[in-house]
Image 1: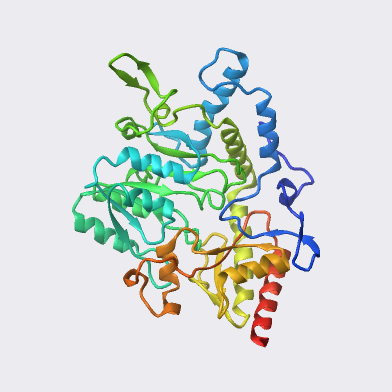
Image 2: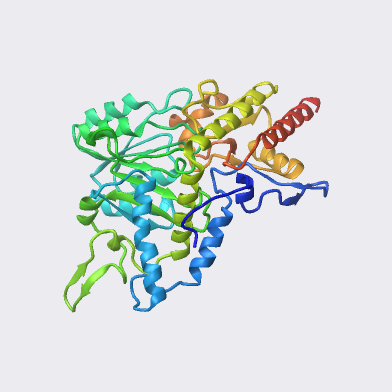
Length: 435
């Protein structure tokens, strides 16, 4: 029904559900809501919802029925793997795709299958989301590359650790873009280092897929990405769902420790024969609506174009940072001068005001939704805020860091929303100083 996409006479804001919905402030005034929490979850494309609704009229069991509806749904589901591979630049027979519930689920499935001994060593970094830290920490020996004073990943620290272990590191697992600072990592350079020392690379793509074009294939085979994991709910299809794109041959050598129907070729009294990847990683009935929605979101994002998305986000990021720098009492984190390597994320605090209270003021008084605290990245946030505490997070006792407030942009946000946000922060700071 929607094989081609055109939006004559429509702006991108017209394509999104829930924009300009009125919300009640603490003074009972109703104003249009502003969503600056897109790094957590994006609102859905209208066409995504329409596609799911249409596809559900032809919905049948995936891979298990002879009827026309079942066959139609199975075709959509299976053919979607090639569309996902194309979206992430993995157009090669070395890769396969299995669907997941989200990025966390995907990384956990990889960790549970690929790690075969607690003596295996995984190298990750101090800027990771917990989803790309804890699954490795709980199953293997972990090493961590550090970040510099501005929060950028120190790539030569990755090589230092790889050299230290002399080929014993099995996997390097790193985020493509930070959910705290928005820094985009040079994962192809990291891949080349990993492969030089006999490791494979796994990339957490949750924060990159809606912001930058991504290609798993590098300029040379040494720069190829081995595994890429992402979620649909961060790319305008928030109904669950995600995918792992990975090496077919290696996935076939491992088994995830989850079992059930749909992943077997034969079950006999004393023997089980499992299907190869991707089926062995997709037990049970799949979440078909999430796959349908994700595939439509992929199509729409490619139609809009990542050059436009990048340019638009950079303009909003620059405007926001320039405005915040002029407001007394604002503390900014990361490098806020050289921003070309950042997606649309800004983290900040107001001196003397708890981040929870600041986020509450923005929501309750101005209708602006943001995220606060430590964004499931405690070691990273702890390092970024350590100068305010006067201590090194790594040497302190284990506790959640105080955190900060995060503003994160979607493709539909605009300059007027940024200006209202800056007005709100300025007013909060002025009231704080007058107290």
